[in-house]
Structures are given as structure tokens and as C-alpha cells.
Image (cartoon, rainbow, N blue to C red; front, top):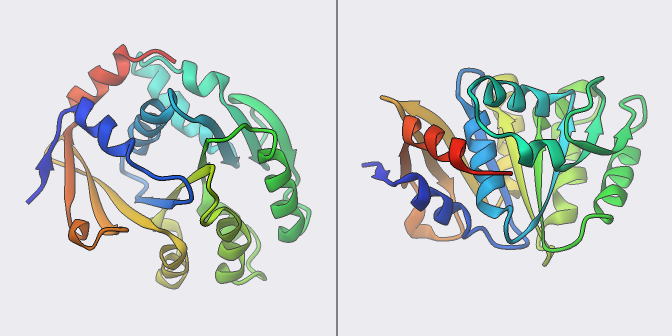
Length: 226
């Protein structure tokens, strides 16, 4: 049974994520994941420094519908961004990493760029599935360990990774889930934005469904300022 929460309560729930965690949010191509991205940014933006890892302009895919809906995008426009590939400049781009380099070089440059973001920091990774698929010669398990393990247990960092499950094999998804401390599955059911707990640090939370009225959430985010 879904646990219905107000938008304010949803903010509070997201705020309980702990430093050292790797949190995975699975979504499909049809889910309004742009709302979930802004929900997480807005809920932690007051107590953590935020950075975005933007793969192939995925941050632009998040920002555009929010701007069209009239929701303030100040958080996105000002956030430090590390880009993998892509052509657009969305947010405050502090590093561009060439996709022509090796994944090992990607990881080194990525971690070096993050060192410039003060702790405690929240790192949002958008388009992680594209990093996995762009180098088919590199096993998904290797790619996951290169980018997820360095932040595992890091005292000053929470890493939230959005993954489009439509674009990955089940084996690749299992590699990602194995390294995560929490896994949520995003959905939209009868105008309710839902986050189903697939994996958690707390055994009693497995299977729990957090549900927020999508219209209420949109209004709430529209009132929030970046």
C-alpha cells in the first residue's frame, strides 16, 4: 500500500539520505523524472553543496520541461556541472570530459573535478546508462565499479544516480543495484508520483512506496526558489 505524503513530507524523506550512500533512482523513458531530480536538488540544496554529472546533455532534458512548466530553474542554472560529451552548456560547467578518452581517464578527471566541490556534497548523475552503453567493449560491471565505488562510504558525499532502465539489460541493472545502498523505482500511478523502495539500508523499508500528488508537487516546486 503506498504511503501518501505531502510535497513537504517528501522533501523531508529525501533529506534523510546519509553521506557515504550511493542511491539509484530507476525510471523509464515515460516517467516525469525531471520532477524527481528537482525534488532531490531542492530538498538537499540548503544543507549540501550540489554538483551534477551530465552525460550527453541530460541536464538539458531535465531543465527544459521544468522551464516550460513555469517552475523556477535557478538551482539548475547555478549548479556546478561535470559534462561527459554533449554540446550544450546547461548549468555552470566546470569540466568537460571527452568521450574519446578511456573510461579510466574519465573516472580520474571526474573525481578530480569533484574535489573542487566542498563537502558535504550531493552529486547527481544524469544519463549514467549512456556512459555504460557508449563503450560496449567495457563490461557494465567494470564501468559501474569505476564510477560508483570511489564514492561508496565517502563521509562527505551522497551520490544519487538516475538510470533509465529502458536502455539497459537486466544484467547491467543488477550490477548497478549491487553497489547501491538504496534503490528506488520511479513511477506515475493515477497522477501520483511514486518512489518504490527496491533496496534499502533498513530491512523494514523494502517494498515501501512513497507517493506524492504530482500536481501538488509541481505547485510546491513552482514556489521553491533556486
